[in-house]
Image (cartoon, rainbow, N blue to C red; front, top):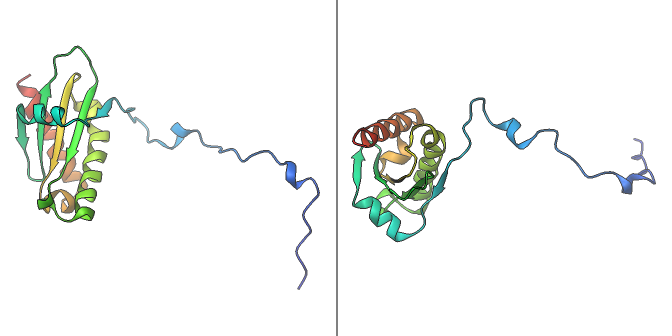
Length: 146
């Protein structure tokens, strides 16, 4: 057995590691950059609750036209304790965020607020493709009256 090589004396002056991948190189082809912001204020959630809503098998989607001249899409996520413990609620919200990231830039209406509400046992357990169909359906129905 041979001992390991001694480090070279110039090893301390190496340049910092640089990633060979640009941040955008890892995104899938045809990826639409995010064009939405997250709702944080209770008043925004309450305003969406007074507007249109569309239920599906796995979620409830509320949507409203803000009519404020801003073209940004805003979205909020919520899951009640009926969905389950904190782990189940967070899993459901992660899935809803992934759906919004994928579908809202292409199918959401500019200047609208959307709130995605998880359903007990359905949002976390339903296959992802079925969730996508549900959200796409809800967005079509909400925009039909616009």
